Image 1 (cartoon, rainbow, N blue to C red):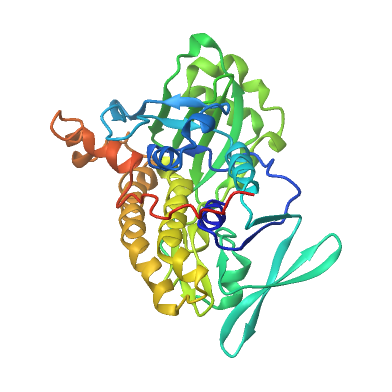
Image 2 (cartoon, one colour):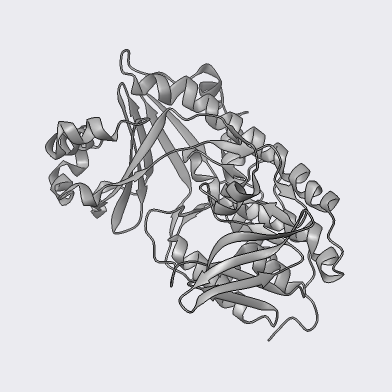
Length: 390
């Protein structure tokens, strides 16, 4: 959606496909980091964006055994020094509305990409399924943004490096009281981990379990799960009964992987289709948005001239591969050094020395900058075409 908006704003004819009739799906990436908020500012959309329902996270606290680790966003060189917790459907609807004000933006709902159209070794479009039947859309460039289980990347035969993840995540909600406090908190203990995101009137909770451990959790029973949640966050013990059955608990199967090559002639993958991220830090949506901005910066003018080459697609990957590698490397270190061993039980976990050192005054800006801005943050370089408005 972000890439389609930016390209249409630059005067490129764009068709964006969404297989569902709306964006109302829960437990998707809901963390809009300062890097993405800064892009909204650069586009002149920030004031309207922040009118949408959201809550602000100015700092994060992670309890690892007896130790507390804090991440602060207050000193970032951005207009917004906080993470906005916003349902992803509101973000997508906001971009869709902005896109509909552009002449060359065409959003097709209930239109699911099913297969690639290839001619002479080049992707020249897609076949899609709609309520009215099959549709062919031909294009100079097809961009796969269809997630970690991407249909298009599988059909294209891209090679995937699976980097591994020792955990899965169970998502659920619990009501929130004013007396709970307003911090976004994480807690890691021997054998268990939970993160709670303050959504104003409820807590969005992520209970981390060993990879493939969902059957063991269910076998132990719902009462044991409720007790485990209460043990990790004693202040919600009085409402764990709100988890009425297993339908209230959604499983996120965690994957960390990336394509060795993100492109073929006429085809480019970005976002989770190019690199599935761990939920650690909630960076996935923001890294995908950064991919979109980089792709638009590099490809807008060539697309207007109908002169996109494979070398330009390779330039997008080169631009975004380093940030992807670094963020995934950090996630894997945290998985292997903290989360994986903690989930196996045994001794009470302790934060690594490097994480403790980053609490020192001279180093305490590093976690906030890495999480809030990422590596090589992108900026809007595309210029709005004079006749772009509808």
